[in-house]
Length: 385
Image (cartoon, rainbow, N blue to C red; front, side, top):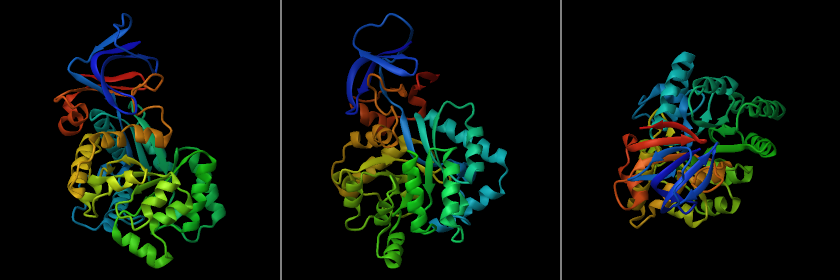
């Protein structure tokens, strides 16, 4: 048994700050109490915030090997499969080089308070096995969304796509598709249907920038968002450039949106309309996207997201909403028993020095990895500094 005592706890889905002790047994939070707990290991959190660990909802961890390569090139030149700069670098790199770079990124995530990441895993089954090897001794939760190059091939029939998808899903948590520019709509719909049948995640990059929307409407008469919703995908990545009616479609569908504001800024494609998404009752998550051009640091992502959103709308935007995008919203989207601190939930917790009376703003505005005193994942102490 572990007790985190004397800290300020961000409690429940509302993230209200209370002075309390958090009692952990096995992998669960079993009690949150103001009473003194006598037994078990004690962690003194005096002067600290006790908060849910972060969930990074969209990462391409494989391109950790290509950090800061391609700056100034177009997004298509950098990441469009199968011949983008990233894909060529991955093909030319040795497996051990890719593994070591992924290890570094996972350790960076732990150091900055992330307990869980969702990876768009290129390279089919081989790519999934590389990540398994890289993460073998690292106490981090992976949600792996696989992909196969056959999905891009117009000559591959639906029967073969179905077989490949089912086989891939035996080794991963869902499918992460690159985008409608590379994949036929009927293939997207088929994959989404198979994922739903197997209780898996189906995700696709959607409406990342305006030209994609223009091309989609010109070719099909529909926006990328409409095509994604009609295909019944449950997770849409980006939606930086929705057109009229898109956000209502997503809100009505119940699909989640993973926003990646720093990535959008890096690639000069816009600012995600987070406030409008919330007005349409969309479950919004945060991800750091390609490690090729962003560190996988959710502290940086939250701060950028909050400030760029306030600047974009020229009005107040709640920091609590940003914090939820990095925690409980993601847990709800992916069926995780984490993301908030409450009784019977899985103990994924960070202990962080507090720098102001506003706990959430202290986390978003002022926390650096060196200020994280401890990280617990699934009830196990990863580190205590």
